Length: 377
Image (cartoon, rainbow, N blue to C red; front, side, top):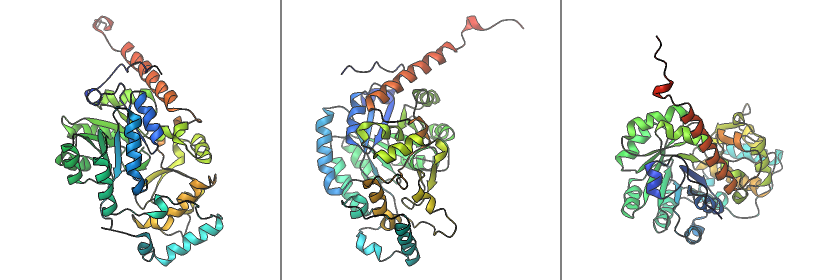
């Protein structure tokens, strides 16, 4: 397959990483990541939901399929989780009122239990789990490692010592300064617009603030980005590229359940909502009847992480496995506006690069030249 023509702008970080476009793509699908890499972007494989025992095999397969192309891995390392945890033990700590509420919702929506084990039905976030994931990622061929919801200084130092480029997703200048003190190589300024766990500041307001404190450290823009013009806009602000996540769920390689793909295609930016009902932390998702049920009068406040997952993880797994059109939801950003139906990663990358080039041409055509400036007073 012929490579896409190079982007008209290629910031230093992109050249350092050996990519042809300032597009950084986050996905939970290895197939998506491979195609982003082949098209000249920098893929980041999310492994926070994978069964721990499966991660080594996933990374070995990814290394082989990448055939030397650069890629990264993203982990969630939230603080204030148990040192070690078992689902069975934590279930005994669930408040009776919350358990009764969720049982009523199971009956109301006729939710059948999932038939297959998954991370959400078999595991719970703990420091022991994170330690296992860190060892597996450090042993992989990933060029980059990214952390979201939390920083581990030991992980940052070990990754850098192993020759890996470290990324940290930050939602405030306070988070950025903390990451810089630990020696993080790249800051990802993730705005309120983003899908998943996010903060209160919008991307257009956050990026210049992070750039101001970053000094010479490269910054990427994340949150609500789904077009080539937005990618160029991020670069024009001083970012070294844009980090996109939601868009790839429309790709066939993402293997998105049909009901979820339809929900995403039918949704507008306003149909995403920040809720604690998914994980216990603020998380932007595309709304469904399950999410709305937690907003009804008299509904209990969601529990904190990781107890909310213990309470509802099997339901999240079930509605995905059973492709429930009324209940299915997923972390999704305001960039959902760009999803209109199923496509492919190659088509998405072609569109992004074409849009970026057109935006570049528009911008340069509007650039003021000395001969264009009237000397009349």
